[in-house]
Amino acid sequence: MIERIRYPPLGWPEIGPAGFMRHPGTARNRASERPREYIGANVEDLVSEPSIEPPSADRLAARTRDRAMVRPRRRTGLTKAQAIQKRLLDIVLSVIGLVCLSWLILLAFVAATIDTRANGFFRQERIGYRGRRFKVIKIRSMRDDPRHRTSVTTADDPRITRLGRFLRRTKIDELPQLVNVLLGEMSFVGPRPEVPGFADLLTGDEALILTVRPGITGPATLQFRNEEELLRATDDPEAYNATVLFPTKVRMNLEYIRDYSLRGDLEMIWKTIL
Image (cartoon, rainbow, N blue to C red; front, side):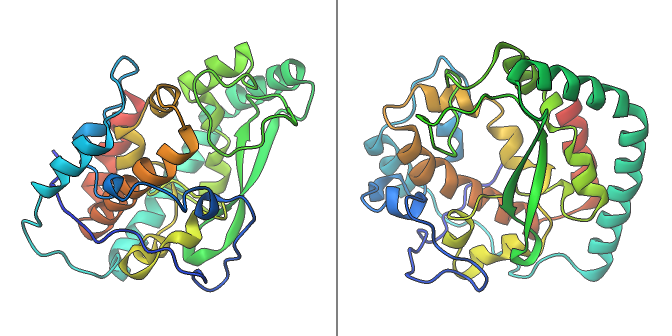
């Protein structure tokens, strides 16, 4: 069970960390009128069951007032030994994964190419280790639609194809990220890589998230397995993502880094497979 810890609200500086540039229409602009009550939302309130209605601002504010920091946390990232162990695990598992699953990746690529009538591999710029930009690789599950330009995807997004829904539900669309892991751009476990515009919202201690490689899975990924269903149940998915989900994921990722252990990574990989 994740400890209940209240971190300071996310800051909204005019200039983000070095290397980042704000983009027009990004989360910072879209969420400038965000309800302050959402910040500090309790993780248990954000359950990812599609049948559960998203928590209201009043409920989140009430639960937040009842939460307090229960024990001190170290403010540093992984030690050098931990970073080496983690990287070695990534190399071994990514090689094994690519050898065993390359046929499935190739099959999914061909099917997605036919289904979407575009390149079956989808590459998108993300912010990774130490703020470096890289291209995350996925199997394409959506058709291009100029009427929908958003980085937030809900379960009923019309751009998702029938095959794409299957690929996303089974996480087959994530398998090409094994290449990102092997290249050292990602890790098996860690915070999900953010698009430019969200990553530059990390301020102060939150920038600790950029000291580890982003992961295919992680504590926030497991907690919000059905995130698209949760977003579908909201009136404004983009605002809910920016003011509720994103701050909550930031806190969970900070806890993961501060409490890091190799055993914890192995447990999260196993939970992801199951």
